[in-house]
Length: 151
Image (tube, rainbow, N blue to C red; front, side):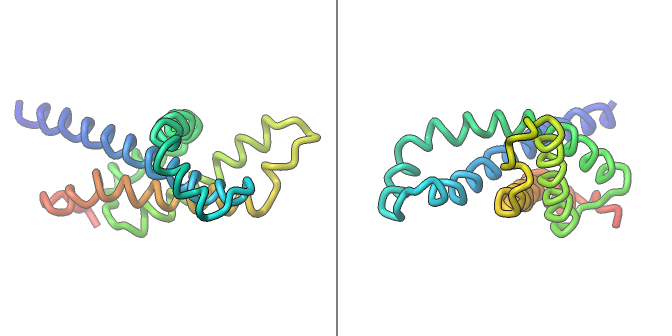
């Protein structure tokens, strides 16, 4: 019976980690893309203090939607192999960013070139690394502290 409760607890931890990863990746996207949209550093501070309180959670929903399949693969591999290191989640997050770009590239209009833009790909990879690190902080590191490390 305690195994069932541990499994349910782990599922909630994974869900909390996914929410944290989506929010962190969204915040990273905001930090990297706002200056690219032509805002000055003074304006970016005001935007992040005000409108981003709504925008970051909204974009996090989109990030969670587009990154769900790569996240599912990463977490299943990590749970079965017992991978708990930060490096695993950071590298897996970068691969998830590349996978999201691949989804965008396949579904994009041939005239749209944003998905093939190297700077855009780098932004998605950076957001994936931050998202993977946030996931590790919430769901990976506590598992190490509880003695559940398999590596």
